[in-house]
Amino acid sequence: MRKKETAKVVSQECIGTGVYSMVIQTEAAKEAIAGQFISIYCKDKTKLLPRPISICEIHKENSTLRIVYRVVGGGTKEMSTYKAGDDIELIGPLGNGFMQREGKKAVLIGGGIGIPPMVQLAAELKDKAPVQIVAGYRDELFLTEELESHGTLYIAMEDGSRGTKGTVIDAMKAQAVEGDVIYACGPTPMLKAVKAYALEKGMECQISLEERMACGIGACLACVCQSKDKDHHTNVNNKRICKDGPVFLAQEVEL
Image (tube, rainbow, N blue to C red; front, side, top):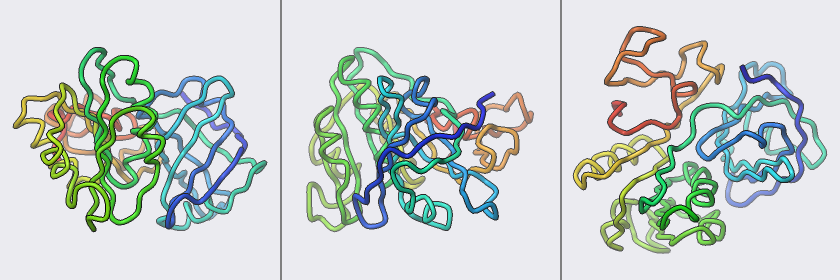
């Protein structure tokens, strides 16, 4: 069982409209892998539940993690005010990360705030297999330099200002992106399209589900998704995203 710890903010900066990058010194960095997340507790004690944030980068040598998140409510708004030297309470690393397939040509697909986990995954995969990254944005880019340093980057933008106009699937088709394994994280409509594309192409597909979580450790059953098989914990066709995921083989879950 993971324990809550007091960690320290190393740095924080705004890297886009409402998008923040925070580096944290934490024991969680020693065991973390790509695809996992941490849960951060607010200083405002009226907000009882921690905020789950995916891990963007891991630096085990100095025990730091980088998270990149978007301000969407009171908890993340509070987080955006943290400064270097501030103490924060967190628990992690939590969940199961991506199952990395050595020697298999990888296609990493990230949409919106599902892009940050792709940075660490690309860093871990680049010495094992060729890495192609397809990143989908609405109208503003972030983390492109980090992604380009670990693989070949293709951009899809809704407004068409960079890369392919349209969705990540549009970009894959336009750029003839092919591979053996898809690793994806992003909003559910994107993941549905990616799952269908992988099925059509006969590719293995791993998806990281985004969900509002409560406890973060699988006890409360607030973040379940529908699964093809019965969960041994509940004996129903559900999986706990925080505990059994957030990464699943696409065919294991219904979207």
